[in-house]
Length: 338
Image (cartoon, rainbow, N blue to C red; front, side, top):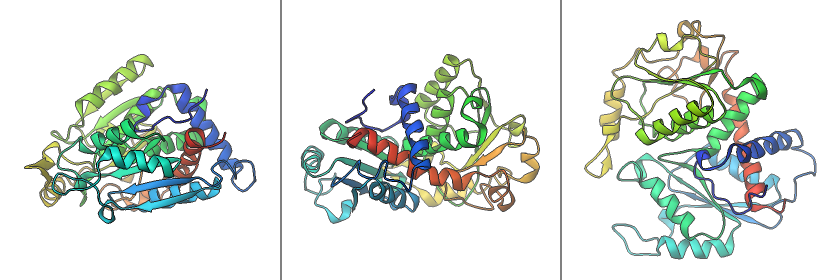
């Protein structure tokens, strides 16, 4: 099936067969990384990377991906461009998307918590670019979803559990306390793609730290469609029972946004009170010798202890590497001359 020109804002928007196509290609690209097999797929093509928020792995992995496919990734910052905002005059999304489509083979957008006035605004911006763009729009993480991270997570599970063994295993998606006010994107992407691939999902967090109700309903439906279980727990210890994969990650409280902005200091003060919500060795002993994963950067000593994050069952670096491979596959299939 052809994926040429398809936007990627959330894995839930793609069929399971399309996701498998990306993952299978990513696996082969990983195997053939230093051969000529895929070295000219983006020959003389440019991918625009539109960063409202900074990054470490995202910029590095997309730039490396474009280079290894024979293309180029160009770093762009809105603050250095004359773009229309609620407070300033400038170029509209319609005009910017149409013009950039004439220059680039695809456009990546990264816009997270502190660059928007309310949850959902990042999603709206990505959707508006997708409406007007003539080339694929790829979310490089926005406030609601992080599709490339979700794909990298699943490739990591295929790698360590075996593709045929993922279905029926239990993912524990557990909140971790910490000195960061993290958006919901990686967590929501994780429970969506895991449930698409037939995993049982336990979502554990302190009372009040609810995620997007729409995403929860999508996850429940994915689980029903696959004969899998979905449950919510507010117990920071018992939730680990029977888990095969543990994904500990801080995420912000729904009340973190008010009065048209993110109140980060207030959110950090609230989160730091829940010191029992940390992934440690004792809790991991309650699991079925679970893998530990995290999208990084890790708030060590708060979300998870060093002993777990750097332990023998941690797959964090493999998953981080997989960002490169799934992004190469995604770019090749949607933008390249495959």
